Image 1 (tube, rainbow, N blue to C red):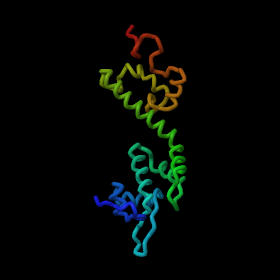
Image 2: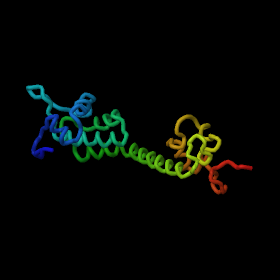
Image 3: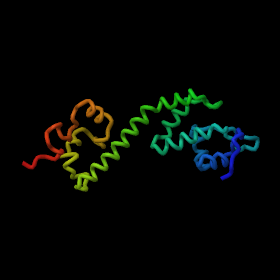
Image 4: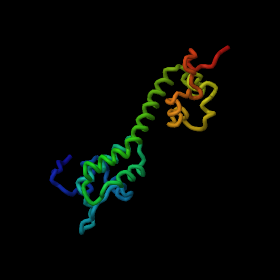
Length: 179
């Protein structure tokens, strides 16, 4: 990788690609989608301000976290496009994503823990698991991954025992009685 001088104020698409680790075609796509901007030279070549590196880094990390491009675009749209954003403006972007990222972290943690619990159960089948969803009680709540939906988690944290989970202190592990 070529060492780009930190004094360079503008980068070609190739230099930006090399420094950011993002392909030139992806950079052009981001530009077409309004996520980043460039100016054109007299020879119609793209030139990116060096601060675009930070925006590309935010896009790259956000995509890895599963955040859709339209959400990324909305948040980056709050930043000025004609100058380098200030620390305060970046803090505003971080604040806008605080809840989104906290929910995403909670969901990923639940997924990880749920998979470990399910694998540890021993039944090796999600469809027939009597421990985590006896008699498909979660199906009565509606379609989709009921155990991993935010509304369900909120009611569980408020003290409500979600359908399909053992009642507190009943001495069972959630399996239906064999009596």
